Length: 273
Image 1 (spheres, rainbow, N blue to C red):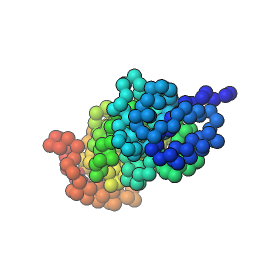
Image 2: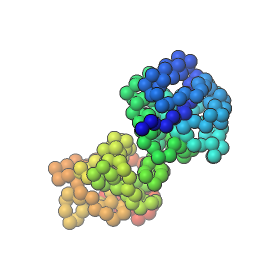
Image 3: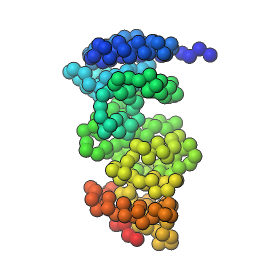
Image 4: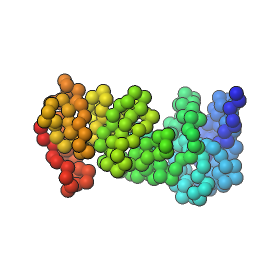
């Protein structure tokens, strides 16, 4: 079956970067039609309004306006396309992209990475990068530690402060996420996806093959067994037996050295053993 044509725009102030990406897309992706090449934000916005694309390849740093400001120039009913950012940002900044569930390509663009991004785009049920995702990205890029996350699911996109995440539980190719604001949600991502994104430096720790926890939400070590922890929602989570001492040391050290715990001043108990 013939794939439907995808209309795309490339926006990059570097002429060589525009033309190289255009050539790669033309040579390797026959169903993607590049309808316009743009060299600044003004021409990009005009092209979006003219062509109503499905996809925009957007350089994050252009003269006059950052690619992150694109949504500021458009009305809500014009936000019906997906963005793949093209960037030369550092590894730290790329973490911010992952937390916002936005796709990106590193310069110079590699064909394999472009193919991965386009395949991910094709699998999306709705072609739409939301203003909230861009806001998460902007905020995380300006902070010493990322503070917000976008979690895509079959029901839509969830947005959380990092501290709202209590723990994650593996369920095959899916994950259960326990939160302070929305209770439990179920998403089609493996636990490894979240483990790679939410690092120990951010206060997250894989304590068992089935559990990834936010250590800020540990209240105590279980009284009924040394190989489990009690979380702030009252749930008990298993700890890999041979790592209990190591994990408890990490939890205590992180809480001593970190910023205030979630909902500081409420009923969360200090970690005890």
